[in-house]
Image (cartoon, helix red, strand yellow):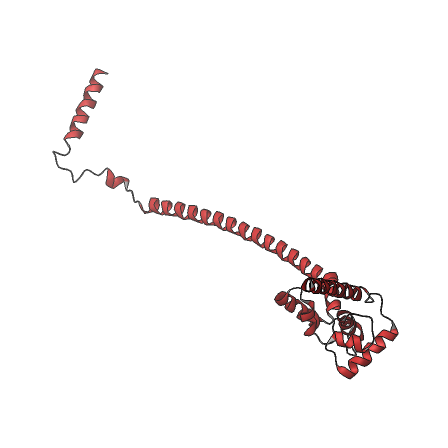
Length: 215
């Protein structure tokens, strides 16, 4: 009976611990930070450094979780925070880092001194993402226009090539015709013909004479 009683007591103790932990989590203040809380957090960080945020929250006597203290310090209370007026160099760096890291805003902010991840994320969503989409549309339209122009150029080039071929053909034919020499006197010159070769001429004349007689 004793072992069973010990097990039941252990279960009750574990359940009480879990209930206590849940109640502790629920008791954390999640509302807006006050000036007094900011002062306490800044004093503890000045003495112990910006690390071990759960310990900092406890030492500062704040009813805040470690994550809340870390975000409050990084986004609002750091002495070297920059706000607004993002330069062209910073914008170019954000574009390059986002292409490499994606939406890992804390890593991007770590490479921009004084900038917070929250500010960079908001600047990206409100400004840079729209700028990139606009550039993509412009590049797409310019590519389409260039493609249509190149297609027109190919058609015009093909037509002009065909016309040149036709001109070359007509010129060649004209050249061939012009190269043919025809002398009428030489064609009808029978002085070099022998008597046998002129036999068809005599027969032609005899037929011609007989036709004249009948007429």
